[in-house]
Length: 183
Image (cartoon, rainbow, N blue to C red; front, side):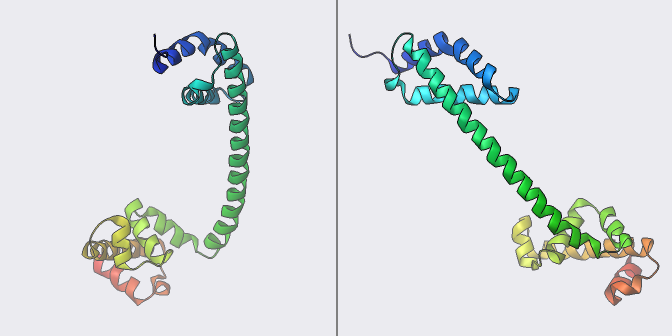
């Protein structure tokens, strides 16, 4: 009789030890959402290291050790993610305050009344400073299509600005011309 079939051995191990490992992890996990991930990682490690797993009751103890280390890794990862999230939240707060403070409310309102596609297109030009060719790559379309869409988006913005603000001249002659062309 040759060596045992690895798949069969793993299936037997899984069937015999799943309940014990599951209970072990459930009692120690910080969040219910983490339980399935930790159990899956534990048995994935067991599959990769099948030859290292002792036989009999010692297999359960070995799996407990793997589950314990997996939980510790999971907690460390969560701590790093939480710290990164907080750091990014602080950075974003620093970035967004100056950007919105100098934009008149009527301009912001006009911009927000545009469709999401128009806002994205105008943002790529105004905020990111992209050329038509670069925008075409981002959007996955031709430069001609970008030029047409951009022209239409600018016209719609001019109309929105004209509707919400009687002093359209402050946005420039082109805005006045685009608004009159559409109205």
